Each structure stands twice: as structure tokens, then as C-alpha cells.
Image (cartoon, rainbow, N blue to C red):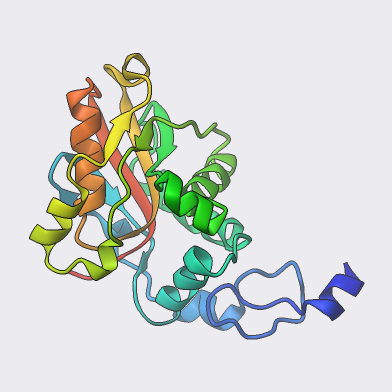
Length: 213
């Protein structure tokens, strides 16, 4: 561990500054100053019973999630997971039967080599002593939502992009979907609608960060 710390000095997941203790994933300054949401960042999205997130998608949080999503900083999932898990415990514990995630397309998976939402879901599941399992498949590659434009354009971009893997697994069940970021909510809305049409009783969502209203 000491040799690894010398070769790859540990950095804070958010501000990216060096930290002395390699076991510390979030520095003390960030623990205090991160843009935490109030009341678990609850937001209502069409077809979604409730969506929660511990942080706002801005400043060091935005930079951190971009490194996680686009620059192979996969270890960040272990730092995000306790924050997301606490949010779930506070707001939607015992309300869901299945914990899953919003998947990326096959093309994105090949390009990145990992699915950031899947890694996060598995880390969150571990925090909650649960198991994460796939319920959706992205069957159509879409333009990145961040560059699509208005909420209407984002909704159109993602329509029909997901399919339920095993309808019998979600029928009559409440599903918790994990994602890294929720901005307009178009993606989780489409996933919730797809699950609802397959017979899911309710769909919840938890993310690391959300946009401010």
C-alpha cells in the first residue's frame, strides 16, 4: 500500500487534491463544503414515485462525476456509495423490492469499458447489504443527453431506448434504479415508463447528484 501511495498518491474524490491517508476517499474540507441537498434532494419526475440525491450537480461534484464517467476513475463509486446509501435509508428504505441501475448502451460500454451506473449500484447495494441485479437493457444508442438541448429534445432522444430484460421479474414489484446524475429527469422517466408498462408497481431513483430546480 505504501509503495502504491508513492507511485499513485491518493487524491480526494471531489476536489482531486492529494490526501495523506490513502484510506480517505473524501477530504475533510469537501466533507464539510460539498453542495449537499436538503431533504435528500427529493424530486418528483413523471412515472417515478420519488427520486433522491445527496448532492447538487455543480462545482467539484460536477468535475468529480465527469472524471468518474469519462476518465476511468472507477474507484470513485466506493466514495459515492455511502452518500447515496444514506440518502436511500433516509427517504425510501423498505419501499423497494429490487435494486438495479440505468444501463448504458452496448456501444458506450465498449467505448468506456465499464458501466458507471452499474458500478455505483453494486457499491450502493453492498452498503445496504443487498444485491444489485439488471432489469433493463439499453437497446438503442442515443446521443449524450448532456448535449441534446431542451427537456423536450432529451425526452425525444431517449424514447424507446430501453427494454425490460425479464418482465416476470418486475411485475408487481417496486424497483429502485441507481444512476450517477439526474438533470432534467428524461432518462429515468423513460426507464420508469418502460418498467411500468412491463408491470412494475412503482419505480424509485437514487443518484449521486441532481440539478437544482
